[in-house]
Image 1 (tube, each protein chain N blue to C red):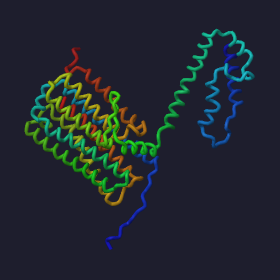
Image 2: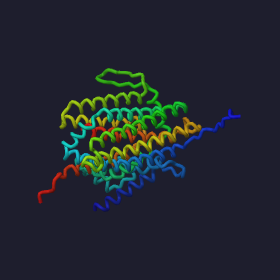
Image 3: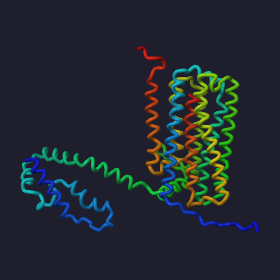
Image 4: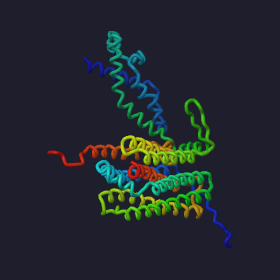
Length: 215
Length: 198
């Protein structure tokens, strides 16, 4: 019974797809074809389908549903679509990656604008380019690191702030000087992947005792 | 007769080519991350288990020289990105000046690293002389080799610019060199903290 019902539902969805105006031109953009037919049909709940394409058995079955059962069915239908939606989103994000022309335009905008920082509701404007500003921060953080290393004894309160300052400096160089802030996110992924794997491997190595195991 | 200057039309690079060249550079840097990660991990493991040895070395070497070197390398990264900014604006002379400064700062960095190695070897800290030696010299010397390669590359960029290369629509060669140089800077930022400060 359930199989038969599902078969009829699929037939109904196919009818909806057919009734919609699918662009037939070979030059029609793929997203237009997807956007106007298949994807809409898949996302459409049965209740929203045109009355003439829904079989009477399906209508009768839905009329017997309680609101809870209807919500559960819709949630199940939505969950079935999730893997496909995830793939579609991934493809769309790649399509939406900025072109080099757009990236360079954004970098040029940042390069030529004064640095504006908002802290605690107050806005501070520095009439210098972003690169010189970042260099000043890098220099300041380095001085702070040297001060901490000279003053604090070896231990957590020396290691932790030094590690944080060092990470901030590295991220500043990568974000502003290497332009990862504006550029294609694929570049950031390419460099982040080995860093993450190496960090995890280091944590495993640190867990190994320096002396031999007692067995 | 020597006043005749060949003016070549500026080459316009395709955005796809720039993306590909930059991605290739990022992949190379990713492979370099793996090598540096091995060297850094070796040092960190030694450091965790031999706190006193590292403390003695810190006291023997001092911080002044290596701190100065750190500022030099940070300044060279700043000079590099300023050079890129200039060529984007069509100022080739500005590019030549800034990248020359980058090369000079890189050269001084390597020279001072040589001075530091001499001081350390006089203190008995050599590659085979102590457990600390190899774990210290491997990452810092490997980084130093990167700086030497970077200085040569910077000089090549300057040479190419002096011959009329690069322009506001064809600067991917400068940009890719910049990625390499900043990466070398990032590695030093981490090495400086891990090896000399912590």
